Image (cartoon, rainbow, N blue to C red):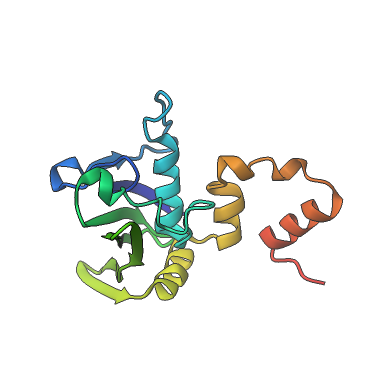
Length: 184
């Protein structure tokens, strides 16, 4: 079974953009509880976990509103970075890093996803794969040992979508078919 050890967040939503602002969250075994007042960043932490594991942005953001606003930071470019360290299904140490940049172009902001890196420690040696999103997404699904559908609909289900188990007939069946990879 895979186990998440720690994650660092920089430049995402209200998390600062300077190196000194980087926040590191250490996860405990078997349970970590996120507690804090409204606006403290609890949802952002879960959204970062989902993004680093699947490459999917929070609903409605398309990445733009996920990265700290360059206007608020008084910068033309804001780099955001999420790093995750975990043990994969084989117990091997894995580190993954995803980076983004949001640039202020006049009155518009331009968002880009930068190349990601996944590093495994095999037999005491570091083996890194630097690539575009799709390959890292596949690698993460394999390393975590769960399907993307389970990650999105069960493990890191966004609070706006959390009522899906109460859906009616066809919609509920489609969700379960997706989760259990069932086809006709």
